[in-house]
Length: 295
Image (cartoon, rainbow, N blue to C red; front, side):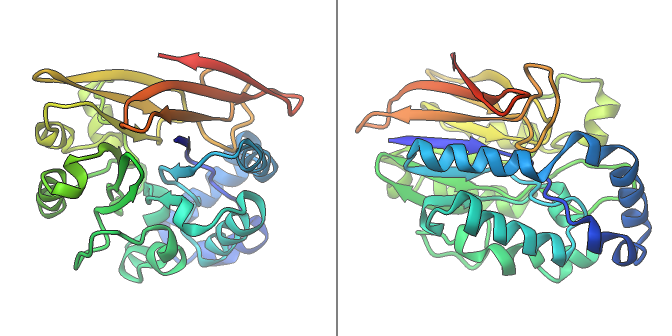
């Protein structure tokens, strides 16, 4: 089984952004950032090329770890829906998506559940629950578990938090028979790794990372994230088990830096759920792709 992982496409809709962005102070600063810098570093055409390449690679499932949008505007989500339908062009039961902080950019976006209403087919859970997150999708030898770390924050703050109630639901899922007999793959937008100064992590990291890690059972599993816009890999050892953690760069990035150029990962599993290998597929500046093995 092959699972592709991409993140942070940040699909733009600048034609409709400016006037609607003035409805909140945070969207004003976000729009200024878009106009001044971000749109030079992220292009929709790059995200389209990544989606086409994934579609042609014939993977079994795709996971997307958040930040589909920039300002969580409805017009941006319409752009996301079109990208999923026309560019990635895979059935919704073959694609799992979680929100990032840019998808819950304001209290209004969170209150109106815009992410959930537009992307409901991509977060449908195979184990019924009264809450949208965490969801679980049972696919052959793996169980894909989607978490929600996206919390509306003040201007200049992008920290994430899963919260006690969601962590308790995750605990129950990890101990369910359906998940125990499969290899768990946990999706969370924010990195669980705190490798920057404490103050920066409190502003931009996952604030309850330690509490999440304490829930991981002593077995093999994957934790996949985005948010940092660069390729990352490390491991968390839990008893005799090991959880491998992979972050992937932005799917719309125009950067030339190897760790920040637009890319996606492919994780391959055998019939027992053992990970056989991991590939990083990176877009070159000329639009071609290079492939290399990750650990």
